[in-house]
Length: 153
Image (tube, rainbow, N blue to C red; front, side, top):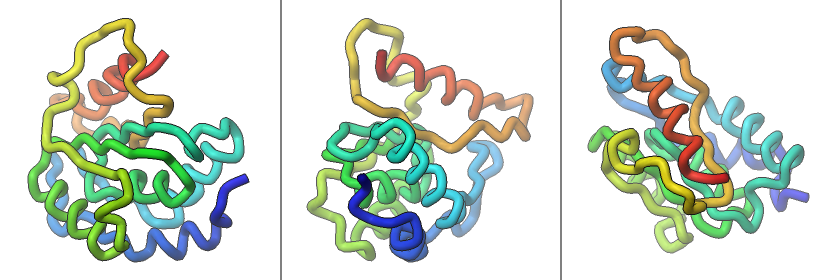
């Protein structure tokens, strides 16, 4: 059973600031606190896949899903983000939420190029925003989704 109710999680996530200037080339879209709370709460209630688990958040943006996963009891959360501005906002959000020392970290990298298929389990749970598919030339969100399969069994 999650330590926070869906309503309390939503309330906590209201403190997480989203993109100031979303970059369409990275297909950055703001996930509301309500949507993030619903997604994460359902992941926990349906699969028990957050509490006590190691979690990777691919294309973590400003940390909405990462922070929510930690609030629902993840042991550690690793965020991966290609945009330096988003990483800086993620760090600022950790400070605002008083989570700087909470086993949650973000790495500036192109996760699609960083990891290759292997047989090693990297984390227990992988989270990411759903692919929006609005930029067919870039196809970045689909590549990110494909990469998520190589992070776990």
